[in-house]
Amino acid sequence: MKLVPFLDLGRLHQAIRDPLDQAYRRVIDSGWFVMGPELEAFEAEFASYCEATHCIGVGNGLEALHLLLRAYDIGPGDEVIVPSNTFIATWLAVSQCGATPVPVEPDLVTHNINPSAIEGVISSRTRAIIPVHLYGQPADMDPILEVANRYGLVVIEDAAQAQGARYKGRRVGSLGHAAATSFYPGKNLGALGDGGAVLTNDESIADKVRQLRNYGSKIKYQHDLSGYNSRLDELQAAFLRVKLAVLDEWNMRRREVADYYSSALADCGVIPPTIPDYAEPVWHLYVIRSTERDGLKKHLEDNGIATVIHYPIPPHRQNCYKSFDKYQLPIAELLAREVLSLPMSPLLGSEETEAVVQHVKSFFIA
Image (cartoon, rainbow, N blue to C red; front, side, top):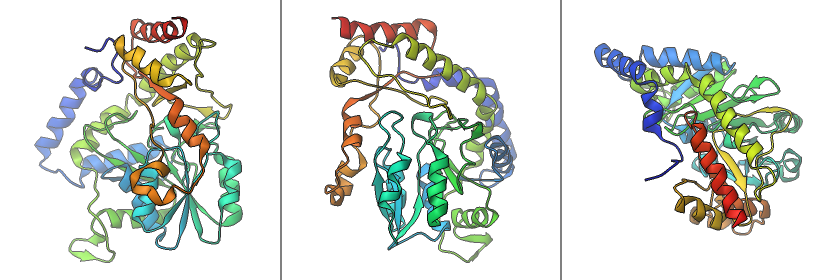
């Protein structure tokens, strides 16, 4: 049994069990399970929270990205700039539209896409940039938006790991032309199943995504677009409304855990995260680096501390992207060799975080 689990969702949900039970009963008693009042209410509440005009609930985060690209008519022959260091869904959404992902290396300090490297890969076929707010820390959006504006490109935020984070005081999800997010259970705002959403201030894009998520239909049995079945269901929307009400509180506790880790792990053999002045992260993940990552991971697991590698294989080295082997992306590959995510949860207690720190230190002292 783990002394410190990476993320204990059962324990997390026990803290809000009563309102979750009430939400479940409310949906069951209503008899309405798809595209109903719970979804409408959640969309309004989450849009307001993210300082966006429109929120459209969809099936998951990958579909949120894919539907946005479709809404912008991005497809075969087009190129979309993506981070080389990200979860593969960012790339897959581009590929599924028939477009080509064009990777850009991260800033080695923040692990997010390096804005200064974007202009060098823009071509006549480039249509969009997808910056990812990785680990819950916002990408540096102003220089990304500046280069996008000069070249007439769409900026779609991948905000799947950063619900509640701020960039220069503004919530992520409202910084670009549109944003996609995921409500996978382990996210800061996670459903009790799959889910996702699109955020935008553009009414025409919002309307098109609403149509695409529902078989391309605005009117029942009338289908004007070749659409999809990608709808956030009533039960998940109701659960998300409960969790949205405690999201800021839980994010604050994540910050406290991260602050403790960063202070206690300074000068002990690992590289802790760096927070730029523009960022207010929400610590979906707390990711350290070490040239001895694999040994450290085993040492921690031998002592009951669960860890995860985000991510062990960069997208361009995955089997499904064999044609990208020609790319030289040394920073993404370096991070894949060195990163390690420590336990992170709003319910981690002081004894648990102290155990994590002491076992990290003991590896380097031994």
